[in-house]
Length: 103
Image (cartoon, rainbow, N blue to C red; front, side, top):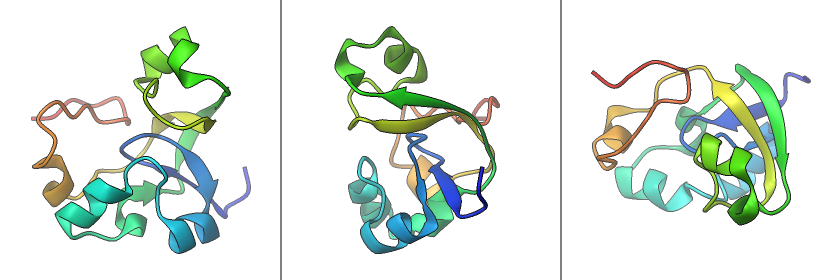
């Protein structure tokens, strides 16, 4: 992976740093804005596994990754890092993408 790619800690979509800087996350930007945090605070350069989603609504892998309601794209299987608490507080059913549990 080139170091300019990042993954969203909330949905797992992988984009370049420039894409996140310019356009934000195509799935989660509204939540980040509501929480008053920057997109970069909610993305990580450290992630594992890549899955290409062409038709997320029809994919069992998309359901397993919990991205079946998201746009088609490349998604990380695991994303290291912690979302800002302001974002987590808005999401009652949040499950971290780093494999840990919410305390």
